[in-house]
Amino acid sequence: MRRWWTRLLSDDSGSGLGARPAPQSGATVGLSGRVFEAARPDKPTVAPGSPAARRPGERGIALVMVLSMVVFLTAFITEFSYQSRVDYLQGAHYRDKIRAHYLAKSGVRIYTLFMAFTQQAASNPIVQQYAGQFGVDIGDKLWQQLPFIDTAFLRVAMTGMGLTDVDEMDMAALQQGRIEFDVDDKLQDRIDSAIERDSTALTRSFLGFEGDFRAEINDEDGKINVSTLADSTKTDVRTDPIALAMYGLMAHERYDDLFEQRSEFDRWEVIANIKDYADPDGQQSTALGGFEDSLYDDVDLWDRPAAPKNLKFDSMDEIQLVPGVTDEIYMTFGPQWTVYGNNKINITSCSDAVLYALIKAFADPTSLDALIREVVGELQVMRMLNMLTTETFISTVTAKGITLTDQGGLQALIKTNSRHFTIMSTGYVGDVESTVEVVMNFSGSKFSTLSWKEY
Image (cartoon, rainbow, N blue to C red; front, side):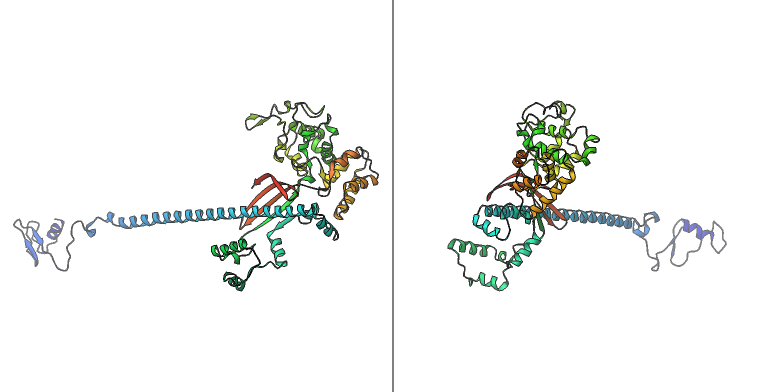
């Protein structure tokens, strides 16, 4: 209609609005005078509903849908890839953690084997006599000369002893049966079955695995066993040898501020509280410490009222439940305390602080601190030369002019052998590590596990 009126208004004949235009070529005039334009080959017909016939605002919707789908798929694939990577790394970390854990256990087993060997060798007089010619005490001294074992040390030791891998020619000959072994039938059957089951196992090195471990040993008998206070029959805790050794460890003047300013208990009160926590009776240790139950009236432990255990300590961590054993006191003196062993201290493996504590606890109060430290230095030299015994310990102390208040009590408190050890082994695989801490009691070639912790 719009096209007709436009054509009508622009008619060149000038006939006006009422004039009917003459039909042109290719046009048709209807009965009402309306002019219809015929279809031309050069002007294609637009079908209704086709994409070209849509309104301009409807164009581009397909592009938006495609872009939206691309964004959605990109986000989905990215999240899937990220989650797959996280799962893979978690699995790899768990795999390495398991490997490190068993490497740590291997370190414990190897050091246990070494300790069992040394303990058994110490009971053999022929071996002791032969080793004594070279100035070596195989018994309780050999482990001190080898305070740790790790894979690097073992690889060097095996290489030095000629314990290398089986080469390819020997392995081929072994698999083909061309090497003769002087073994019994049972062992030969085991060799044959091992070759049949896994022929590559014989080509692997004893230490040809991924990762490393390091095992260290610590002598528990070289520490002061605070747990033995529970068995004390002394009516006054200040006369108990173990309590005296604990006091000697705390006696130095540099700890005055710790007990006088930062703690509500003095030295003897802390020691008495430890005894009252573990001993079976309900009486306080003379005038020292507090009444056992009253010390725990205001203490909540896991939302329950705390109370003295009246039993020996099960672990070192339990000592921190005792009133007065603050974190600072535990960190300062805890490394020299233990809850394993008996009431004797190994003077050949204890620390310098324990040597000082033993002399300080039994020395006359007028003895100079500098003189005691001089004696500790001489005892260290004697220990390095394998000359330190309980007798030489006492004679060295008295030879310096130090008067002992209870020489018999001091001599009954010291010894020169150890049976209780802590083995701490750590396995390393990549960036992952795992630690096993084991306390063991060795008696000859036999041993028993007293504590097992994993970190």
